[in-house]
Length: 171
Image (cartoon, rainbow, N blue to C red; front, top):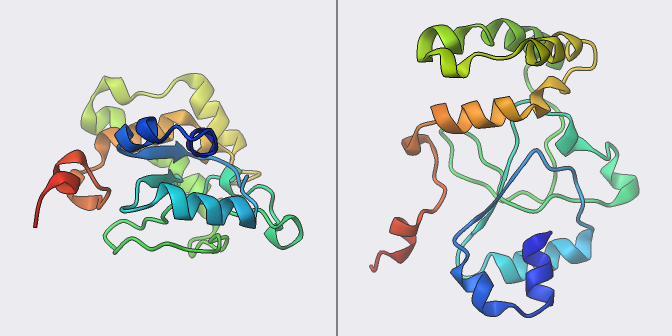
């Protein structure tokens, strides 16, 4: 919302200096008018607004029935290893069942400290959150730990997100 407020307040200089905007696990907040406004003002001449969602995080799917509320997400939809797509709809049907994924994530959470070091060790509260997240799957995916570890362990070659270097390159 901050970039939209800057655009409405005509803070053009500040917006031009801003390289990218990233949101992590944000719920749907835009209606169709704000969606079109942000698309035309914030993603021109290149995409600079990115929405990051970890796996089956439940919060970005709220409110659940977008057909009643008419809320949308703004930002590019990214799939690892695929060309980025700009979608007008929200993907709500994961191919891997959410309950099985929640169980997998619980067991997987024991591996990063073994493989990458103690800085990736989760607290007992985080582990408890994962166990509780098996019943309503998707809750544990909203943990900031997931987003931080994904960013730290992600590789630059898997991401097509524009950086200052490839934006300022001249053809």
